[in-house]
Amino acid sequence: MFGNNTFFDKLKSICEAYAAYPLANHSTFKIGGKAEFAAFPKTADELCRILSFASSCDVRVRVFGNASNVLFSSDGVSGLVIFTGQIKELSAEGEYIRASCGVKLSSLCNFALKNELSGAEFAFGIPGTVGGAVYMNAGAHGGEISHILVESTCLNMCTGEILTLSASEHEFGYRKSIFENGELLVLSSLFALKRGSAEEIEAKMKEYTEKRKASQPLSMPSAGSVFKRPAVGFSGKYIEDAGLKGFKIGGAQVSEKHAGFIVNAGGATSGDVLALIEKVKKVVSEKFGVMLETEIIYVE
Ligand SMILES: Cc1cc2nc3c(=O)[nH]c(=O)nc-3n(C[C@H](O)[C@H](O)[C@H](O)COP(=O)(O)OP(=O)(O)OC[C@H]3O[C@@H](n4cnc5c(N)ncnc54)[C@H](O)[C@@H]3O)c2cc1C
Image 1 (tube, rainbow, N blue to C red):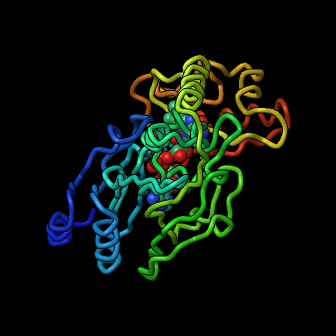
Image 2: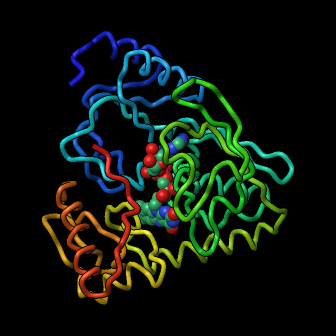
Image 3: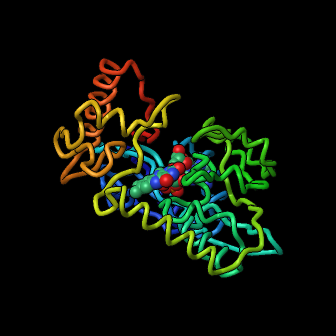
């Protein structure tokens, strides 16, 4: 552990921060040990200042939004973990919405509805933030972030430079983007929507919510779909056809409701989840010759 109180004292002088912060309550999986340090900046400026300070102290930094696509190690995470959820500015200009990295996708969608702007409805119900969604190119119901994103204001964590990336410079692919290289951080993004009728927008959001409720184990902690969609077919279908629905290792279980999800059925550790992921990959590969690729991100 980083045995230096000076680092923590200075960190606290920049923004809300904690030492030995329990991560489980801060992830949708409800799994994770303690972060050596955790920080909760309220503005992009605070975020940039923390990053510059941590870099000057050579402290490892990881940045998360709502931690809805990650599995934190039950042994804890060394260095500094930053959660952006309090950086949540939203503004509309004509048919454009600018949203800070910590804005929840549900807030973005409700804001679009209020402004009678259509195009973001697909994202309603994805429990992430704008930053995490841009990183993942999150998508659902045939839509994805790349369809509505115009540009992002980013911080280069190596140089401290603030730059604007156009949509094409995001190098979006299926559940991937340039942010995977770990150099750039999304500070805010600009989205282009279209004028629409509030009733129609709201009806779509309701329809998508109902679809999620009917098909996903929303009452149990999870990180959503564990595997990416393979080139052919659906991961959930392969897992179900392999007879693994409900299969459990420790407290981790292949969801009875949606086999593409692993749920924390009570007291699951990251080791349980990782072992279950390996088991699922092995069985599906042996039965169908399909190598599933993990979508969720393991953080240790
Ligand atoms: C019940 C449930 C349903 C889900 N349904 C869907 C779905 O339909 N479609 C879908 O695509 N996903 C879905 N997910 C997964 C997840 O919600 C999305 O991937 C979401 O976009 C992640 O956002 P986040 O803020 O939680 O990111 P986090 O989990 O916090 O982080 C994910 C990655 O993004 C990086 N990151 C976070 N913020 C930033 C930033 N500001 N700049 C750069 N990198 C950043 C992190 O370092 C990490 O590598 C679901 C998850 C759950 C639990």
